[in-house]
Length: 281
Ligand SMILES: N[C@@H](CCC[C@H](N)C(=O)O)C(=O)O
Image 1 (cartoon, rainbow, N blue to C red):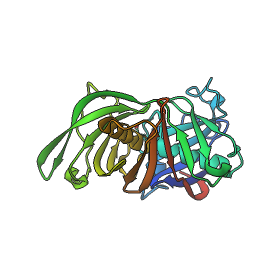
Image 2 (tube, helix red, strand yellow; image 1 turned 90 degrees about the horizontal axis):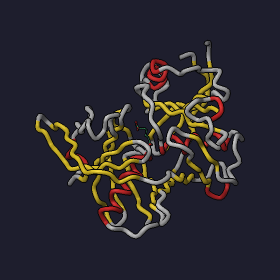
Image 3 (cartoon, rainbow, N blue to C red; image 1 turned 180 degrees about the vertical axis):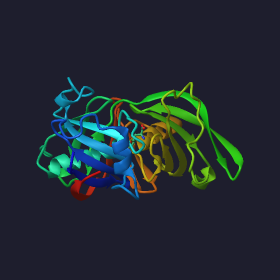
């Protein structure tokens, strides 16, 4: 393979390399080594993950899903995940701006966690995007821990499944968890495939702030599925009325999330394409 096209963008500074590969002929299996090379922030393009843009009929994981396009998501270390909330808005932005979908209509996207439907504000390709993230699962409470300056700190953490696994821990201050260079320690029996860990503080009514350590990508500036898991944990703790809009602040920006009366989580936020080109990586 010589050079091939890419786009680069972010959602609340959770950044991704997009690889158009509509018929699955450009990248074949898309190996972990290539993903790591693309995401490398010094020797590559740089990103928290890679989104391959492929037709659902061309990928085993997508076949049978009633959507033309499939988001084939990989973490920066090359591992697969079921879903990416910031990535799917960016994926939709690219499809809409490049005329591959009609933003005036709801846009279904295939993922390893099934179909997610995107709505563009004002029916505009550059409008804010709301994603129907599906039904969350609130599971058991466990513990997570980190070592800060040689001292182990532990917190109870609620297991929330947003298609991918999350552990949500309430802390007194977001600096309590230290620099998060290493993955927080979790219970492998509860999270056999690893976990995304969110640390959360309250900012006001229906308003929280969080940091996240992502499975496969390390600490990131934002995580869409993580923001949804945090909203669900907060609404659960608050016994909040359904359809309450929560504001979730992250290091890279803010997202709005609500849990509807019919048990679906809706996430709204920005998505920005910043570059396109071709690469030999
Ligand atoms: N940043 C993403 C989540 C990406 C996947 C995650 N690291 C996992 O392995 O489950 C988001 O915006 O949701």
